[in-house]
Length: 414
Image (cartoon, rainbow, N blue to C red; front, side):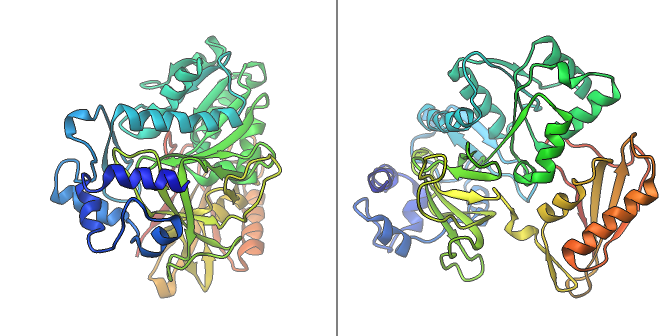
């Protein structure tokens, strides 16, 4: 690990203008140890990167090599603010494809599989790396770009797809469309569904809902970011636990307020250093993802890769304080997804920070025979979980939006 960090620093100092400026006067050299690096290297933040791209358009100064060596362009999804453009060389792209092999290996994907990618294939990195990595593994790969949900389901049936890649929300939506259109998912060949983009893949209630809708499939979670690439894979021994690819990333978990290391098992912000993406590196990058700080040691699956219990819990800035109670979107989803009658839901946050209120709209599915009873049951479950009353309203079928990519179910108003 230390040799990889030193090789990374050797490549980017002084040719990478962003980090040359950032590390000027810190005493950081390629010979530094990991402990020394953690002690003196400042964190990198998204705000810095956005500002750098605005000051040095269009790609910023976090480029280690001449621009003509870069061959891949991607852009963040902008679900949490200003989008960032990201460039890769063939070498840094290959590093990410190698990382994807950990995700596919954990899901037992082999060259005999047929993979369907239910995405629009815009500039978001995850689509392209997942597709290219599956091709490199020898899989037959089918793009779902430019298709409606029913056409995607038909392609899954016709091509006898065995692996489906999508978001947790979209896996549920496809299952609901299949039921509405009379497509029997017990007869399809899908044996694995690999999800990312939302915390839902590691939420037991959401995972159970997906596997109920897709009875032949097992769910596999993982996560990544355009800025850093594919980061984690699902533990083969313990669903609900993600392992960070230890050979690819230097991992830290910090208290987002004090910036001190978080104690093992305590929630904190995930900080990553990309050890192999030297063309556009990130060192001590504050990802904004909330995780449980990993315990050290060997996992039941045999790896020593850092283990994130419960996967990605939330975004650090997604937590709301409502009447003195810390409320995370994943915790709300864990309650709502317990009820199979719920087709979709939306959360409304209103009021100032001091007088914040929460309400939830739920859209029942066609098999819900008593909407009033469902409303009461969800309200009771939320009250038990959060020790406060949360208003629940039932809305008509087709009222709430559906999402192909990251779901935007939380509406905040003041």
